Image 1 (cartoon, rainbow, N blue to C red):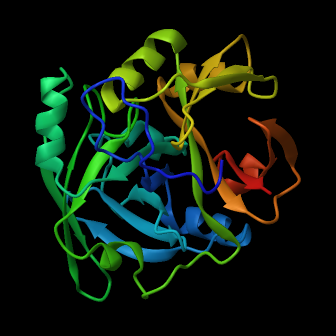
Image 2 (cartoon, rainbow, N blue to C red):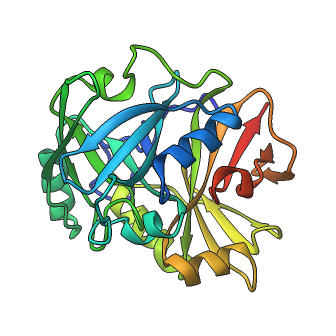
Length: 288
């Protein structure tokens, strides 16, 4: 899977111009310091990124050389995130919960998607870095529901993207190359596949089962998106019951993988971190 061209999507709908390249993935928890410490112990160093202008959340950023990053997010001290799109994940140490893809012109993408019957409503956002630099962006959820859960949300930088991704001018994570895959728990696999294909112009996915997750997986080649539908009791079913349809796992590219558990997905070897060591976040590493 590594080395593919993100833009080489097979068109089955009008939406053929947007690359599904990971901008960032959000990992939510109740306390940002706890999240940052746990991830640092696993070799995933994050830098404090500042408070969001929504007045509810703050974040730390674990950035990779390929330009993707993890957003570790929690409520600001003394604030409540209950009304935030990701409030349930923040309040319950929900771990991986949302993701975004970057676009150059979000309003053009919104117009294109609108013609295909998919609503996107761009809204301004931002945060202030600890050094005082103000970051601004425009983002929009794809379809109904909270941003980045059932489908990735779109984000367009209105200030320099490098300022958002690299607080200190370079990647903070040294041991891993970037974010490879995001795994989204879904209830109706066939219906969700059809929706993703018509929305993003994707080819038919490859499929396999994963007994450890208790799920059937569907990966869209050329993209980071993997859908996971529960086959019975297990990790996927428990996640759906607790949080509904949303991302619940992610995979990095790396040369070495943790050994807590092993899997083989679509012909590639995966090592998984112990979720308990990452405040519940389910994260693995794809190795050569």
